[in-house]
Length: 211
Image (tube, rainbow, N blue to C red; front, side, top):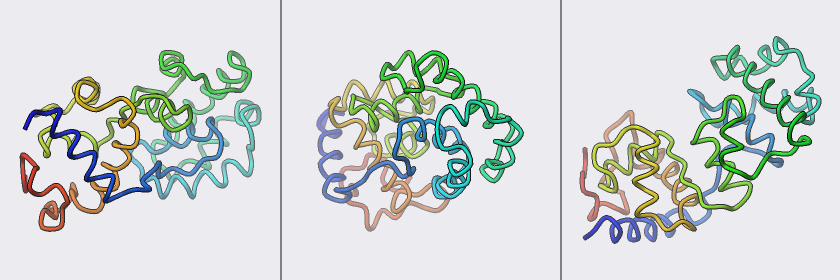
């Protein structure tokens, strides 16, 4: 089985296993997803979803958050960890959206990368979830699972994993595929315990079964 064939089979099986998988960060506007994905670094999505409720209650739009004192932002987001750097990035990002994009999130990948605190993973998430464009989000679940399954070979650097996956994952499948890897990585192909290979829908095609 080629990597392309393996990828298609994995995609189909995960579709059946997690038909409704989507982004686990709560948001109803693009700028809120930008904020949440920055807060999610080294923090659980569940905690981020709780913390941002207080943030948005106090600062309900891009302008309000752009004008907020960084120390006030930090006080609210501190439970997510790395409060100072995250607050600084969020503040700078909102100012840039206000001043350069009329308060709107740009739908261009390179433009997203120029926003403070936005890397390739965040930019891909925005492109896929907000704008419905081809995207591959190489978070820790994606990197771990694609290596275990055999879609990539011993690659741990996020950008290199992303580039390898672009070659074998149909562009229209990338975003949903990565969301399904998150669900599978949390429930079955876990990181902190031995993977539950006995209940894995990929058991018979996984290249590194049990590793």
